[in-house]
Amino acid sequence: MSPDRTRRLSGGEVALTLGVVLGFGLLVLLPLALVMGQALLPDLLEGHVPHLSLAGLQHSLANPRSITAITHTALLSVLAATTATLLGFCYAVMLTRTDVACRWLLSITPGLIFLTPGYLKALAWVLLMSPGGYLAQFGLLSDAASDAFFGIGGLVFVHTLNLFPLACFVVSAAMAGLGGEFEDAARTVGASARGAWLRVNLPLLAPALALAFLAIFAEVASDFGMASTIARSIDFGLLTYSIATAIENFPVDFQLAGSQALVLLSMLSAALLLDRMLRRQRRVRLISGRARPARIYRLGAWRYPVAAVGLLVSLLAVWLPMAAIIARSMARTLGQGLVSSNMTWRYIDQALTLGLPANQALLRSLGFASITALVCGVLALLLAWRLDQGGRVLRNAVLAVSMGAMAIPGVVMGLGYILMWNRLPVFSASGLYGTWPLLVLGYISHGLPYALVVVLPAIGQISPNLLDAARLYGASAATRLVRIVVPLIALSLITSVLLVFTRTVFELPISQLLQPTSGAPAPSVIVRYFGNDNDGIGSALSLLAIVATGGSAGLLWLAARAAGRAVWGKGVGDMVGMPGGR
Image (cartoon, rainbow, N blue to C red; front, side, top):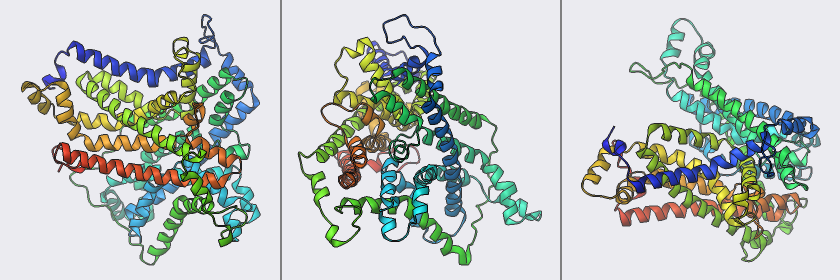
């Protein structure tokens, strides 16, 4: 270990380290602690001496709607995780082990799916599958199929299309190290291609499939978007929406919300614990010097039929929902169909006109997301920089907390911020509750772990000798950070900013729970428009939010490239500076 990482820190550096760690704790850890405390210590925020009590959990478990929400959440999570994992596995095998046609188009589908949030896809599918929706207008939907969609089957269907890329990425990564030597060995002893897959490849891929299942289970259980759209419309109660309802109804039932949040966190913790146990299991090492290239199966006449199935998945997951949003944003009514007399620019014009509610909501979200992304980028840089200078124990602890915080549902984080800034005496006196700065703080608490997870490993790869040499030549800590660290990790830093920006624009639960009195951001307004049968303006606002987010991200990337060339003489893509980099 280099002297730069073991030397005694100055008083200012110690203060900075304590400051960034304390800020991380206040932003992320304290709200979560208050949620758990509300469930187990009901008198914690009532001005009385707190005492441990299970009354809140008993109250929750005695509530029939809570029991229904818990059962529905567990059932939906298991079903959707199963179908999404199976679809993701098949999609990964198709891309990595076959000579399927149209590979380039099929390969971009998983990435495109992550560009839009799940609740927008859910709202789009409502436009498609309603009795008078677009599929029914073209004669592609029967009444029975429409009725079946508005139930647990429809929820599983949309979740599967939204989350199968996660399983595809996990399985593809595992298959990258699965060479052809194992399958060849099985074939030499008489096994068929199917037998080799069932007896050799599938057992080797089982840990990756299990990890994908658990990750998707946690995503479905913590989802708020579909719980507040399709599930709410069919009265299919889920835990995340039940928590929000307990907070938004009058009188507010913090005890019920806290106990339900604890149940939800327990479900997610169980999934994370199983994931951790699987990762700690002894694994078969697949990559060695004797590895052979993986066998690519020649599909022959089946190349195009298999590609057609893959393109159908792409159509259902990406292009059809997007087409529905575009069509509805340009149509006066849904029922009159896609005829020229029903076309209008009115809704898009409303979303683009300054001063109108839809445009104000869009501008708020873009502004809040910009502030959040920049603050998260700076905080992640400073926190990662100080942690890398500190001990390994603190670094691993903060990284573990960040990974855990990424699995915390936004509705739980929003509840924690309500408890913190509305009921905790020291913070409630600040007057921040109900203002947009508190909403931005909530965004930052949810986005900071993502930014930190991206930036911290990048800083950890910088050779300490570079920093030691700069320090010996008299460079200050700030100079070393700006002139050495930032250029070397510029790609990771810009990636973290773009990731947080994109997530924040479409962040629904925190936007809804911490909505400021000065005006709601776009996600809350979109859901409200669809809930009030104003789906035309809701679709237009959704479309412009997607376009504006993509355009803003592109402009930010171009600005970063220009700044890199102006300041350091290199573009962002060239500022790698690591061994083996460009």
